[in-house]
Image (cartoon, rainbow, N blue to C red):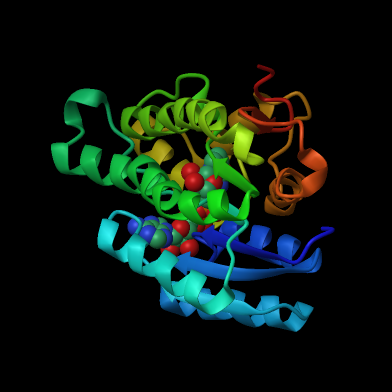
Length: 258
Ligand SMILES: NC(=O)c1ccc[n+]([C@@H]2O[C@H](COP(=O)([O-])OP(=O)(O)OC[C@H]3O[C@@H](n4cnc5c(N)ncnc54)[C@H](O)[C@@H]3O)[C@@H](O)[C@H]2O)c1
């Protein structure tokens, strides 16, 4: 990274978000971590500091506008800049046929996965416009591009994130603010194991059968590592990615090719 940078990473407490915090810190970026879980955030903060960068954990609920606004105010007051925003936090939502999804489950999934992205961008954009520079990366999913049976709220939210990304990129490009989406395939870790378990309960297959079927869907026959997603995010957050905006880039072992 060729400039002093501060990144705000949502959902940085664990999983892909933690890998993104570590990857950005390793390239010389200070990190504001916005997560609902204070305990895991503190662990990520320790990891960032052990790399030699500043870490500022701020307990935030992305589904709550006041909480997001307070987070950004606090981050800006502390760091004096936010030139990178990574909207990574997300929840899987229910695994159920559409007619069994409750209105509350629908709202919660859309609130965290889509509304939260809007809230964060809304609050951070004035800071980036004032600075005349910014890099925004939204973590969508390959499920933002193709159907995933029994996951209507999640797929709808992630398809929304891609539409939001393209539109915002067109709005803010003249301010040297780039907006891209990264679409992971199936990333190894506790979250995907929970999804496999829920799918196994619904389908009657074993967790192992589900996992093997998921791997078989990809060109490389593998799950993706969170660090591999983080690596792509780091590139998109760097000044080197200047001419890449409004894109949705798959990191999916070749599961999806469009
Ligand atoms: N893991 C995968 O296979 C996979 C695949 C495609 C896309 N993704 C996307 O990548 C992103 C990260 O996924 P992950 O697997 O690391 O998930 P994870 O569940 O391991 O971590 C998500 C983080 O978000 C935080 N979070 C949840 N709700 C929040 C809220 N309301 N406010 C603030 N923070 C909140 C959690 O506390 C947690 O730290 C998500 O957007 C997810 O949809 C994941």
